Length: 133
Image (cartoon, rainbow, N blue to C red; front, side, top):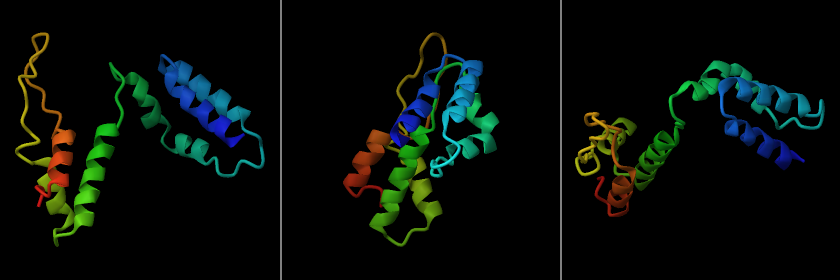
């Protein structure tokens, strides 16, 4: 039962626009039983961050924080390897790695270069080879 509610919640992100998503969230929230589903604090979290969560549909194209989460995972991995660096140093070494920041032409449809940050696969390769030290 909880699995079905979780999956139904994820379907909200399949909605094509903000209003549809808000309606889907309201329907999802109203479908929860009034008792016995205490682990579903998701509704409260959504209400606490309502504008930020539904701003997802205001973007011109679908974006997520997956890149940031991946980068944080690499930073945590570097920290676990432990060399006595502070978090700030590990973060800087990850964000400003010269090899990972190499940018291709990036010119498409008349736009100039766009810098999206370090290339995560390159950082992962460096981390696995101990090159982020």
